[in-house]
Length: 340
View (cartoon, rainbow, N blue to C red):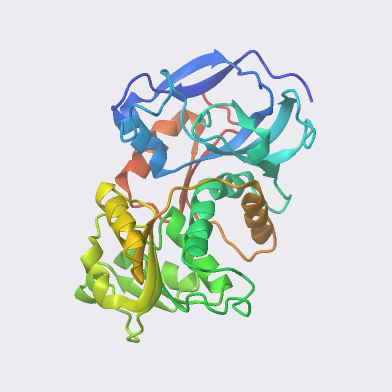
């Protein structure tokens, strides 16, 4: 592989707030991989809500560690340089990686930890690969936290949940959760907006509810089933809203927890409650990323891309994610782009 050029185009922000307009196009030096890192020539990156929540200051003062900051951690591309100690990758490898919380994905090149960089099969596009690390891993970890132990059609899930509710099922995490729940052999009820009812049914959901109708707002299964598990990808649902639709023993795994959710979860834990709220914070795992890439290669897991933007239009991609109505994933593509 030829050595990368010395500078690269990127988008960064230099303070909290500002939304899409706070992202500034810059020309900056190409980073160098440190020990245990790889340098990637990026082909695609995908935006997740956590990216702009960090910009809004929702996890200050912890993130970002310093300004200016190039955001986005989910990426795919080609290895061009290895840091010391990296032996499982080589220049020219096509890979999928997550660089969180250090970011760097809205650029032509980025460094990423080799420990969270996996091979991208030829059958998986760069855009599909970049979409997997955060959203699909979150959906997978939510289902595991709810008691799902196998994704082979349900034969090995004895004792695990049978009926699952997936909220915000047309979004980045939700659309993977529906598919993974079906791979586990579960009966899936899903909520989404009216325009996406057909889309979510097409992902395999057994029952789909418009969240703006009375039944959808109440999250009631049309078949009357109570849920053993809820894969909660929406925001702003108070715990009491779940009570009428939960089985006697049930787990609600919340991917957007607030302070109240964390406090309730702790209280339920110490009182050994049978109905439990579990806040989930994603911890990326290499073996899970490899498995998700393999499921994608086999055609068992589909990535739905809401929209694609070239790097020069990263602000538009950012704004679209903030709007919160994407169906599937929002992707920024760098490969072969002949724009400013």
